[in-house]
Length: 362
Image (cartoon, rainbow, N blue to C red; front, side, top):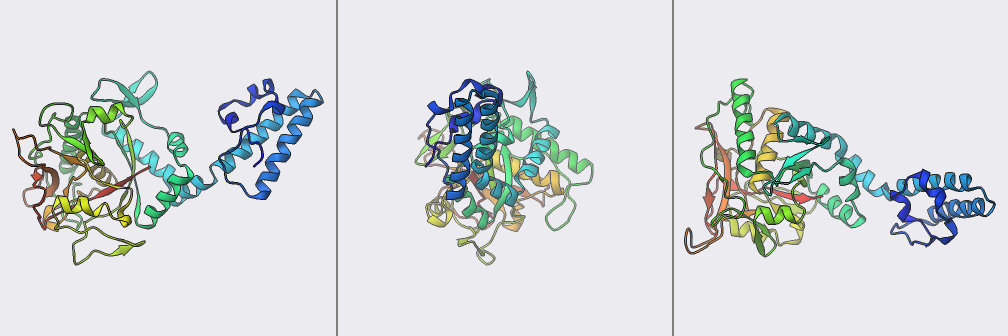
């Protein structure tokens, strides 16, 4: 593998003239064809020749060409999946939605959110998302894309859950007042206030909501502190959840159907066909519903359609005080009463009206 100067990716072309090309020897993480190797090697040799001849300006110019070619090769794989998902357009739409609902604040020229730890977190840029698409990540995403995970969500996870719930509720009210709130089948809805609440016990309070992280559960503050203030996800673009009778197979993955208890869904996600998936949390559920409302004027997850959602990415832990077993939060649209309801489900209690939605992290 020839020298490929990967450390120059973050150096401006105007600075490269101060670097001696003959002293740089950094192996590249890229997997290149022989032709690509040869082309990059040719540029490096030309740069060295120019330096030896005393033509620093020429060497710097050739480094600029090298950097452009390197970046093109570096993002070749990621650009393919970006194009498949129309990811940049989806990103712009998510930013538009967040701004429209007042979920982004301006701080010293940056847009982001004030999180539960009282810190400001800028929304990740599209380039930051692109940078995360390593070869290993792309292989994971390609599999999930083939299984139907095509919809981008940018979730302000670090925001107060009560604030996010309030913004969602206000958006539903505005849609109702404008007569633009519809069911999946096209029936027009009204809207009353949300029944039930996840409340403000989403930080550190005893008995508060926690979030499943493998075999452990963490508070929102703990996750924000570990770099999860914003979540960038792919989800299935489903109007209704599959039932046992309607569940199909997409890309070797059997759609998860409604009617199972929360613990069974958690066991299902251990299977290879559901690898890298995680259950929705209230925050993901709100943003998924908000996105559908914004784009199509449709409220998702009507309980009467067996599309209520067990939010298995979160949990109210057993504590021998308030409860003696883990409880799973739930959410859904009760169309007969025109309101959103949020309750909880016992771990081994099945309800044919409730299923799950899952997400894949980018």
